[in-house]
Image (cartoon, rainbow, N blue to C red):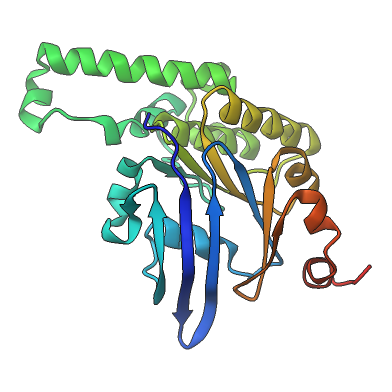
Length: 257
């Protein structure tokens, strides 16, 4: 895994049919930080993720991860810059096993050519053993051993969320984008997420940016929070500062304290 870098976003904007989904957004995320993005539905949170991961092309602005200009990369090369992500709607191979899905997460580290793979030369065999070892480490970390040989279609929603997070970790990112990791989870499952995020930050040294509606989870794990509304940044600060910000209360909660 590459060392975490600073993510620097400046004056980021995108329009859809003349509507500003994200407008003049700027922020930095420091290495090793847990940075949360909050806001009401339609505020532009997931759009920011899609811009960072290059699924969308901005109409203005810059995105740098360390010295790398992410706007120079096609979407499929972003993972090679050390950036992994999960999605608001779970994106897994339904009819494959958990183990097979996790091995897909290692694809970005595959170096052998198709001819070598076909002949399964010693170098390829050694590489496959290493990929399997890395996957086993993530299975242990995420405590999903009971599911390893089960098909995704046979798992509960909460288990699927865990597998998607595990697959993102298998790519060995230094920056992890989590789109609503606690969405649809019960209180016990959300508690598990908070513990895993702490392990990911402290044990793996991965920087985390998460979009999340659960303010209890945000307050427990986030170092800083950015609140957005109607595509614009309205506040950046600690969870406590954001909780007490009157503009955030007005936009996010619908009231002013």
